[in-house]
Amino acid sequence: MSDAAGPSNLAAAGLDPNEVAAYELIITRPSSTMPQLAKSWTRPAPLASIVAMLEARGFVTRDDGAERRYAAVDPEIALDTPLADYEGRLRRAREHVADLAHRYRSRSNVDDGATLVEVVAGQRAVMQRITQLQFGAREEICCLDKPPYLDAPGTAATDLELLQRGIACRTIYERASVEHPGGLHEVEQLIAGGQQARVLPSIPMKLYLVDRRHAVLPLQREPASVESAVIVHAPALLAALSTLFEGLWERALPMHMPAPLVQAGRRASVDEHRLITLLLSGLTDEAIARQLALGYRTVQRHIAGMMSKLGAHTRFQAGVQAALNQQD
Image (cartoon, rainbow, N blue to C red):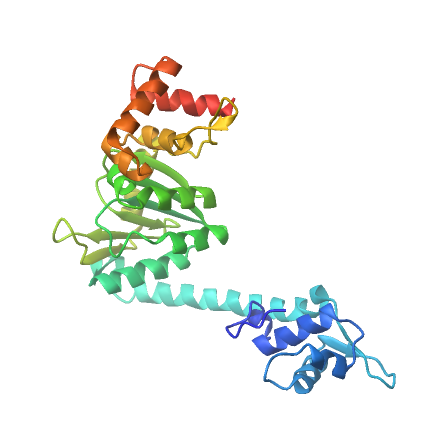
């Protein structure tokens, strides 16, 4: 039973954290009396009144015996109606939002740029708007990722949460993003979480494309900072940005997470699956050495040995052949 004080996962069913805790307690201790349940109750809220509320709402039943034992109603039965009500309210809210959006965009001439393109100024405002659009995604987020970053490049937590929600995420990284300190580790986390990642030597802009309904283009006043962004709603512009992304996606090199190599019954001294990923990403030997926390000459020797062993003529060819060998 969770003692977390924050909002419960069953808030959509109308249960607050104390009610969820009491319901879980009765599920795990069926046919218990109130004194027996109270022995395991650790919250300050009065258990008896909470259980009475659950009983009145059909989540809990009580027998007619002298000891008055409590039992939980099957959650799939007890929670079905309130969740269906919540889904209905959510559907009506979305319809209302769609109506408001239609009225917003038709409040002036359809060619009015203010309704089709917005400008957001200030790093904090830009980051807030990007996060808002990301969490409003229903199907897919496509991203062109390159420095400079609005904050630290540590948006992995947000991206992982979206992946866990089932939102598809495709990202094309500029090589500089992977070379950035900590960049490879973050990309590896996201790939492991389900992100589809590809890399190009350079990309023309930063871009967030959300469900092809909205796009964010962060703007740079100076090479090292982002101070504003353009939010695009215009269908024609969104179609053009989508076409740009898909064209770059076709050209970009997929970033995979090959399984670690094992040589002569033991793991190689160098993390070869990461080395292969970096080779396929086109990073220089210096950048690979930084990412693997190894000496430059050590990396050079290891790459040369891999090329000789595989009969490869280029670093990239060695990376491809090594990745294919691991899949066999």
